[in-house]
Image 1 (cartoon, rainbow, N blue to C red):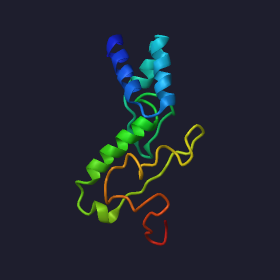
Image 2: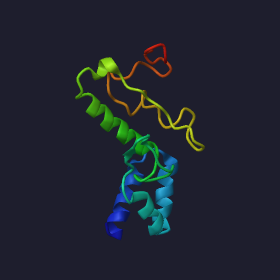
Image 3: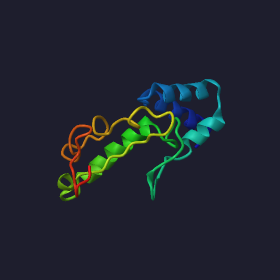
Image 4: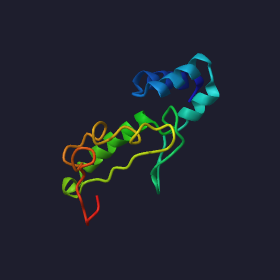
Length: 134
């Protein structure tokens, strides 16, 4: 990706980022023409590993942030809807509780991004119990 494409992607990201802090970070990088920071944050999207989606906290698709979590949650929910008995089996939702994350981790996918009716066990704190566990 050339520098002009990088700047366009970063501008689009900042316009649609649901977190004002990370959106402002991208705007600062753009204003300072900090191409190295932009390249690191927009080089490649985070990928799933054996521990799920993990990465450094920060702005852009190459970091863990609210926009990435929302997009992932929406995509995962869409995929799960195609699975037989997905609603019956349910999903497990965990949060990121590292320093700098909001209380309860990233945006609670049960309330916001996890738009998959029937896949979640109910409102926050009221998940289905399975095998004696919550």
